[in-house]
Length: 613
View 1 (tube, rainbow, N blue to C red):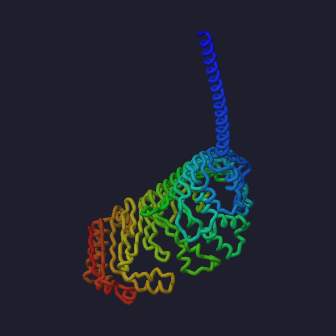
View 2: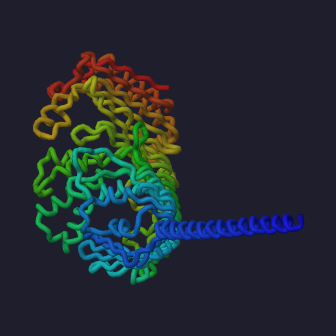
View 3: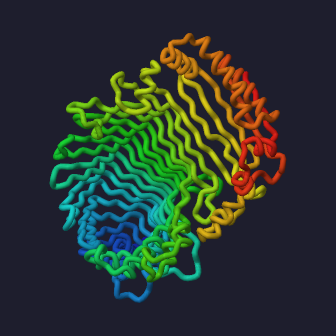
């Protein structure tokens, strides 16, 4: 039993030792396998890390008119290997840049410095952008990019050197493939504008000339830039301009081709909006020590029913001998589309040799120009006095509308001036002002409006208003309608237009005169000259109107009605209205007016109404 037990114990020991040996062996294999797996993961991680972080040195992009240099580019989380990244910047690669950029995706790209060198004729510019960070690139489309600061140098053979600095620059939603296609490729059959970027901002831009003049802009911003390729690519156009040393000495044909190319470039872009705020301009070398400030300049592109709009707000100009302020200058509803279209079609024809019809087509649509809040205190440079007083005046609002063009001629016109105010110097020698001073006026407050439009359906030119008014003076307003004004009046052929103009007729007219003090002052002045009382002179003028006017106009019923209305107005100056309408719906033509020898004969062709209130 003891032996058996000993034998059993030895057997159990052998089993335990064998199990331990097998376990040790298995553990060794497992450890070896784990080590192999760890090494494999490390190698995979190393390969993945090398694909996600790539640095390129001394990258250069030469576009002909501009060279972009980047001493270093650092890619993080990039999907392309080094060789593919280098192909993006290799101009010898046959594949266009746009499709190459569309393959690029990266979490972030850093460029410590970007140097841009540009040569345009005799002008050379070097711009440096620093600490550029580009985030979230997907298939060549950049979500956001920013540069912390920058500087530039501009050397011009004529104007001299200029230098400047800039603050933070940001850009969002940039489509690099589309931008590359637009700038580098020629236009095919497609003419659709494509979105290039969503928005940009630039802070603290400052420019200084070598003579000390400087310009500062606190902030610039823009949104929604669209563009398309042109017949000659944008790159080719800029390269051609850069190779032209002196554009003024180019042949007329070369100048026309360059004008046409630039017109096409401007026609191939569209901006949603842009603005610049906090603008300061100063030139200490100027004898007048002039300085200028503009609170804001803004542009909004026209789309659909929204008209284009460009404005400057808060303009202040100061000098040692005067100052000027303009609250607003605005251009609304303008369009250069007809101008660009005609310039684009110039070809080799010199612009000085184009015919009258083409010149008409070059005229842009003006739209509406508005200037308000003017306050001027400026030197009277026309005066011959040793020390003349400054010219001082204010203007509430000036508005000019010229739109709806036909063959380049606006068919809707309006000129309005509201609140032109100035003091009348008591010793003035100016004709007109001297007369007003003698009437007792010390200040002027004037407004006037002229407005007319062409009614195509009725072949009519409608004069909506021709008015003039003055504070403590009164007002006049003339309205009327001309018939027979056909499209031929706007014909580019002057002979055709002149014949059509002779066919125009007068259909109706109305004049309104309202007294607010001027008539009394005129009566008082005339009474003093004739040594009569105002009442006696008023009766004399009233009698002359009641008898003299009908006699001059033929003593018809219409003539007597006009005379009586004028006499009542003289007796009690208030509001006088005289209107006339032709009995013939076609109106009175130039031939009718010219062949009539007596005013009475004209009145016989009219229905006249005259009232005095």
